[in-house]
Image (cartoon, rainbow, N blue to C red; front, side, top):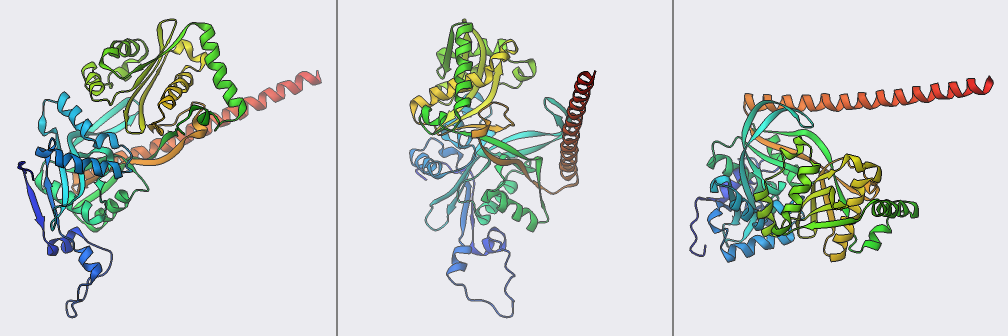
Amino acid sequence: MGGAKVLKQVDISSAEVGAWACRTDAPAASPAVPRRPGASDTARLQPYRVQWETEREHDPVFLREWQALMAASSGPEPIYQSPEFLQYIRATSQDRAEVEILTVRDAADGRLLALTPIRYRDLAMGLQVRYWRMKLGSLHVGTVMGSGVLGEESPAVLESMVRFLLAERPRVVALSLPALPQQSLSQQSLHQLAASQRDLGICVLNGWRECHKIPLPGDFNAYLAQFGSKHRYNLKRQIRLLREHAPLELLRIDQPGSLDQLAAAIERLAPPEVKAVLISHEKFAAMARLGMLRCYVLQSGGVPVAALIATQYGETLHLHNVLTDPAMLRFSIGTSILYLAIEDLSSEGRFSAIDLGYSSPSHSHQSSNRVEIRGHLLLYKASLRTSALCLAERLFGEWLERAKGWHQALKGWRARRAAARGAKAEKATKSS
């Protein structure tokens, strides 16, 4: 371990793994006729060593192992699993125990098989519509940062991590994976685990939802080539009209020295409910120092008229908020700043996508988006209270989806009725 202190570790024997960490759907062998283990059994009963390795977060050897798992990961939110994001949390949090690093190693050779940072928090449970929420209660959860495990995602590895965490941290009543892809191996493994264990339950808060990504080919002309000539003309026309309206300037905000311009844009453009959920100036500064911040501010005549609040990691820009000046909506200001930001990102040649997260974007780039279904999955210790809270959220979410459908149907009926009235009035005018 390179002399580092290990807070807690557990060696899981082959027998224990066979009992719960490597449970399969195959029926157990008859006690009267014991089977001889073959090669497949040896792999299935592979023992694991599950442990905390939080104290090794600055160990160069451990960091190389961590980065190797990061390089091989295809998870939805790698930024939150990175050593840099852990440094950000350490720089901005007073509670060092807020995040711990949980690992699974091969008990035979010590090879790192899986890793996940776990962040502890109280998750509010209740009924929510946009920025309105009625809180029904809260659950103390361990959030699997990045909504997935780095490395091996087999049912055996995931179950070993879940069992270890829930046993070691009794206050934690659930694991939270805020943006787990529906088609991921982790999602399938966790549902199998919950189905096979009486003491565990599972739910998807707010249901499965669309997450949008904008693929970036690496060259701006190649990006524009995805659209028809009319679309390209309209995009360029919007920028031309903005430049004719007033001098136009796009500011890239990725250094601590430029944060005052970002703060001025937020103060002018963000409504109160958005300001309430944005991180502080100090946290923006910490992100900038660690190379994770990349926001954009669009100024017209020296006045901020739009802003993109975003972070960067690897080849992905994570877009969190789009702020616009209502007085500039006639210029399609939101689409315009995104167009200019994509041009700037493409100039570097290293970005492959913009991740919009949970969203239903209305901008004109939507036709080129790639959609992935994700959900906020909660794997919890089965109890009457927790089950009731999850059931309330699920039922309300289902009712809300039906209400949205009714609203859309009503809008469609009104539109058809208005069109029919217009056609009738036009016909009456012509006949007279």
